[in-house]
Every structure is written in C-alpha cells, then in structure tokens.
Length: 112
Length: 113
Image (cartoon, rainbow over all chains, first blue to last red; front, side, top):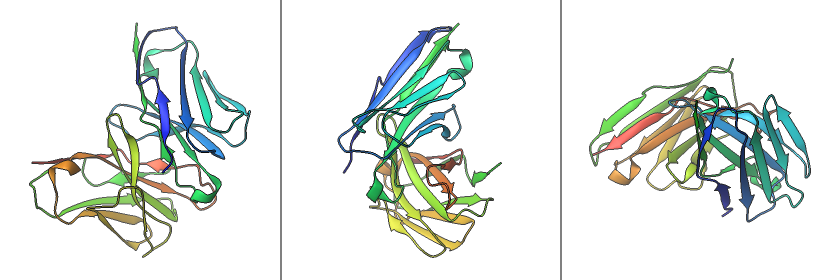
C-alpha cells in the first residue's frame, strides 16, 4: 500500500519561532491535507491542497503541494503556545475513493 | 457545527471480551469511518461505510467488524478483544459533497488487559 513518511517526528521550539514539517509519499497523490490534533481531541482539518505547486495559507499556517505530487510541506510562522499538538499530513490518489493515508504525525511542543 | 460523538472516552476490557465502540454524527453525513491511532504509526483505516448497511474494509480490518443500521450511527465491534488491540480509536464522518473534510470524534482509548 501507499507509504507516507512524515518528518520530523517531534519538535521542541520556543515561542515566536517558525516551524517546518513535511511529508513524502511513494505514490502520486491528487489531494494533500494537513490536520492538527489537540491533546484529548480528534484531528481537525487545517488546510486542503488540490493541485501540484499550490500554496495555501490559513492564518500563520502555510502549506504547499509539491511539484512532483509526492510531497507536501507545512510551515507555522511565529509559533504561540496554542500551536502545541500533533500535526498530521494525509493524502489520497484519484483511484482511492477519498480514502486517505495518514502520516505518523509531528508532535510540536512550544515553550515560552 | 458538525458533532461526532463517541460513546466512551476510556474503556478497559479483558482479553476475549466482545467490545462495542459506538459513534454518532448529527450532520446527516453519508460516509463514516473508523481509524485506530498508535504512536509512530499515525491513523490507520479499519473500516468505512458510504451508506446505511454498506461497509468496506480499510487497511487493517482483521479482528474487527462494523455495523451501520442507521445513517447517524456507526459501530465498531471487536469480537474477541486481544491485547494488541489496545489503542486510541477515532470515528469520523464526511458529507458526500466534500470528500476531503473528515470530521473526527474525540476518540476512545481502549485498553485490553
């Protein structure tokens, strides 16, 4: 099956710093998603990307759909304490009927 | 706002017990999903349903079954729980017109002793 590699596995950053994480796939995807999971909650959709090269922002978050269609990137600028959580990438291919493969997640810890 | 409600936040069961995890959504969504979440492995799809009484296997269906008798309710069943099924279970729903927007419940942390 499809394999998603998400890195880094965890990040410890100071408030105000920028954060970058990425996902790579062994297959071509036609949709990339980024979710955030707060402690004790289910994941919530942050950004959806639909075509190669697309760059989309949601507040301090910016995500890009890689040109090769096999990768995606998420950046968080000027981190704040509420950015703490687990960030997941997810992707799907055209023939997968919207069945998404999820990355293992990036745990982000923000210290004052 | 869409609400996906999982009946239990924490469950502790013994090996061999039959376990039911219940999920209810209030937005008339056609599609419902069950995932398990394990550290370092992310979310893995167990089963999904695209309509009442319809079900499809996901990536890791072994040891699980599901039931969807009503549109709003999707149940995950562990016929004979085993210790390797100790995990966080997440239910999600999705409307037919927005295939990327999964709405998740808060999860059920199941421990099998």
